[in-house]
Image (cartoon, rainbow, N blue to C red; front, side, top):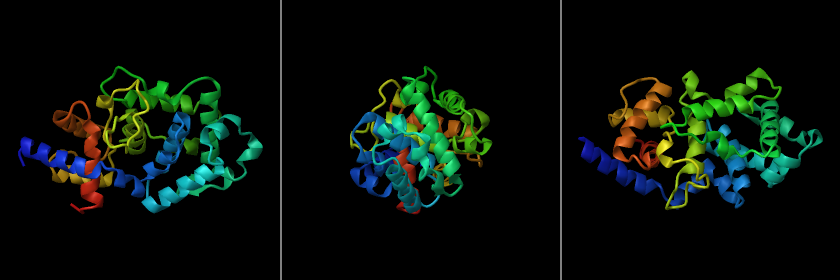
Length: 252
């Protein structure tokens, strides 16, 4: 397809899958259970953190996270004590285990009780949020922690595509007329967002001629970002719905 035809095709597919029905089979359903901004962003951050592997398992275990936080994420984060982490210590999702979950809860508490917001860590004038993610990770792991836990927050400055972080940021920042993404972070432009890149979306993007690199890393993500922003410089990550939908629902 030439550029105009490809853009038209992906616009159509993005509109097809960027619909309310998408929520029911996606981890984004977890933060959609909440109304308060802080509850939404905490639920979204933790759900995105474990968003790899089987989607049913992701949703099941993200629901378990909410249960451990007594279905009140912000209140639990701000007020929990060590004695409240008994259930969290037993949590397991693949390689994300109790020791990791407990640290994430402590680190989030450290952010909120010091008057910070998650959003403020990502505000940037840069064309993308790679450096913001890098700086957030440095701050997030400023408390004593096991080295193993750091792997659960990827770093694009060190070459990672950081799929789960970019998905979380899409959920928080993108102004979605159909109400799938939340758009509750207003200090960041949707134009700065990057498409969540994994094996599946990468393969679809290559079939469509949007990618030439074979690796799914930060350099490849920059290539994909460049091509998607040519199609829509204001809302480039709407095409995540197209790439995901073509792979997951149409086996393109």
